[in-house]
Structures are given as C-alpha cells and as structure tokens.
Image (cartoon, rainbow, N blue to C red; front, side, top):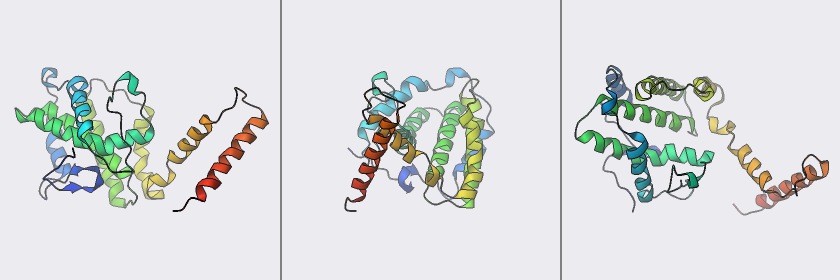
Length: 233
C-alpha cells in the first residue's frame, strides 16, 4: 500500500509544503512564544509514537535506491541502524509517519507540548534535508542555522534536562562548512564507512598486525575495485 497525500510535497523527502502565508519559520515563531506545558499533557512518545512508526513503516513504499529501515524498529533484535538507515529514517520514513501521528494526537485538543514536539522534529528534518542536499546556497546555510537554533531551543521544552553531546556542538559548524565547501555529501564519511565494511568482511584467520595480512587485504580490495570499474554503466 502506498501512501497518498493531497497536499503538495516539498522535494523527495515527503514533507508537506507550507502555504504561502504559513512558512515553517512563521509557525516556529508562534510556537516559541509559548511556555512549557505541564508534563501530564505530554505525549508518551516512547510508546505511542514508536508503535505508530512501526505501523507506518509497513505502509510506506520507497523507490529503489532508498535504504529501507527494519519493520521492528526499536526492538533489540532489530540491531543498530547503519548510517544510511538513520538518514533514510529521518529524511523519508519519519516525516511520512509522524506528521500523521501529530495530526491525530492534536485533533482532539491542541496543546503546547504537542506543538513543541512537532516543532522540534520538523526542525531536525529541515536540517537533515539541507545537509544531504546535492546543491547548496548561502540561503540554505542560513536556513540551517535558523532551523538548528529552533531545534535546540525546543529541545529544552520537550526533553527534561537534555544531555549535550559533542555532535550538538559539531553541528554548529555546518553552516560555515557549507559556505566554504558546498554540499557536504562530497566530504561525508559514507565512502570510508563502506570501505571499512568491506575490509571487515575479509577473513584474516585471526592474524592481525603482520604485513602479509595487510598486503593481502589491500590486493583483494584493489581487485574488487577493478572488477567493479569494468561493470557496464
């Protein structure tokens, strides 16, 4: 079953495009003025949202080339998500799943807690969309700064005593890096991670640190690359 939407989509991420008079930033400015809500009114995201996401994953059909995420997302046997799965989750699956979730939960009564959670989530999706873009402009870098600022501000309202991690600081440098280097996908670690995955699958017979093993792995890797380069495009 493929999900259909009556509203226009903004790009391949499936995020509903805002109307001319209701942009993402204008909605955020309105919600930023609201104070924190009582904890009794907050959505139990851990349970209800996760169940909603798992159900939605079964209904979402993605084209070839888009990494699929496990249907039992969040369960121990699903294992850890790879980098491509994390990206696919935030760029494709979660926007399609959680827009419905927040729409259903706010239908009976809009609360500041629901609005802050939706704002926090959509700001992170906007940042993900910009960072993964193949083309970048100065305006895109500025939009990232604005969206990431709103993400951090709403995180203080959504989460109790949020833990600040190094990645939160690293992301502050992304706008300048985009202005210097252009699309960050050109300098991402995806290629290096795939090389590591290929090397880890090579059998070493438990012998590590001898030049013979490293030389064998390098020769095998070069053979694979030559073979791949001969495949018809």
